[in-house]
Amino acid sequence: MEPTEAEIRDQFGRRLEDKGAWRQAITLAAAGELTARWLEGHSEYQAATFTVRYDAETEAIATELAALNRNGLFTKESQPGLRTEKSAQRQYVTGFCSAEAAVELLALSTRTELVTVAHAPGEASSAAIPVTLDGDEVVTVLGSSETPVQEEQILDWAEETNETLALLLADSWYVEILDPVWGRNDVLLPAVLAALTVVP
Image (cartoon, rainbow, N blue to C red; front, side):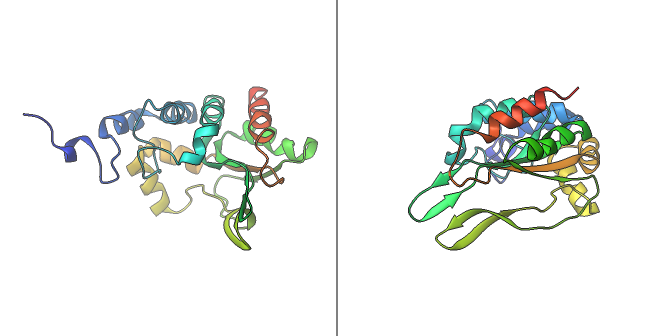
């Protein structure tokens, strides 16, 4: 008997067989590798991303994001820079990392014009740095920690991955790195990768 669609995919269309790999991912490196595979089109399940595939705008930066994931930054969100007559975006990337990686990524703000906001484990911070504009309206902001600090958040991550990884994320640094120049796409991701490659 052939499996039904409900046995193959969840309510978001994500492939359940690919979710199985997340059940075994218990390190940031393992989560990063699974994210890289998803960005490369080799998986149809990404934890805490309720769609089979990333947005079309991510296509141009997917390869660079995969490299970041394989070098110590388990990415959560990103966007390319964009500038049109009616809208603008600052390129940014966010993710979970070790304390050592957070130090290197924070140092980007001391030697470049890039801005890094680093959130310590357990820190529930909130700020609002605009990164997407639609006309004069601010659509997206950075500055808030995505580290699971509440029990409900940890349970949500455990459901999407596993309990060990959820607890590890709660004990990890969460970083947000952005390029302050609207529309620019050729500075941020190479600089982040360079910073990650010097982490011991």
